[in-house]
Image (tube, rainbow over all chains, first blue to last red; front, side, top):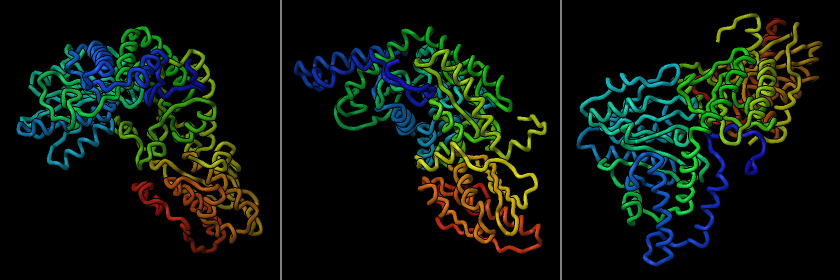
Length: 397
Length: 149
């Protein structure tokens, strides 16, 4: 499909840009190159299309177009939401509530704010990666100005009780932001029904281009302006618009929402087949994340006694692209903070594999993985000094 | 990210396995940090007649184990003790900075196996890790007690 080679199961990292999306974008590099801020026809023509893209995003989220702000991606949207709320509301309080499984765009922003004098509560999650609404409630103080909890986790796919948290935050009069980068295009979102005040999304996770995202900001939320300059994005995020990116994002979110139920159902079927198949075929394996409350395309496993990077390299040699929470693949000292937060030991976290399914995957792909992966795991285990110790019969995982 | 030599040793590792009546066995690293190497030696007349390894770890950990076993096979005990992590890295046409510690582990595993042999022989051995290339402090795991980890 669209020239993808090999078996791509890393859709949570990024997706390809759909042909229909690219085709809508292309004229905006050449024929429709005008600056949307210009008063002449070149500018006005482009402006219309930027407005249409904004309407498409608003429709997909159940928001008003005036509440949609284009950014350079998910990380920027997260930075803006958290820093923007913190600085704009510091006269009210200095306390932020989040979780310890957020994306680094959120966690590192919070760490930065701690140095600036803000206080941050990092809520724990249970063994499935779920945050407790009760914990959120108990963490609220009279200084709390923001609750930021991701919609769905990028590594283990767990979907949080967003609606309940939104309701709680609204009752308490505290702003609620959610990083929905992994969720948009995969699950149905309605910011009004779910009482979401701010939401981050990124086009390249749902078959749009890279380098373009959105921060939805509910009308009335007090937020400092993010980029100072011209009047773009109502003066809150200045800079000449990434027009082709915006057009692409608008088309991609519309397509994703049109086919949401159908594609989610199809991908979920593949995912469940993959999970069941691997759990049946490979001993000493655990599924990370929630069995049901998880993203349609997310499957995350820990294979005991082996290490994730060597697993990924072996899969890559067989044409299968996945990812791992192993320290060796994260470029840091420790394995994934998410896997540690759900209670995995370092040792088991090192042997994790995320396969995230999407539009390009087929039943045949799953069959191929089910054929190839058990052999690879067994081969690495035969090489592992940890495995020889358990072959005697200890089956504890 | 890895040289062709590393990928060759990773995908076709030499000398994988165990030696049942090994003259010496050395195990270094720990699972918490994501790598363990275990080296088995069969030594006769001071010559390393056979060597096998088992490794839990990343691509570089497997490749450094594999090449280290090749580099000491057929050598005298003294020659094997001179194996440095630098030599391991060079033999693999280089390693990414964050993976240098794997070469240190390989050197340590060989030395630990020889030490075990010496002990069984009732000989003392002065063990030292050469650290010909200093592992990148930042890239190494602070939780391990081992020097390079």
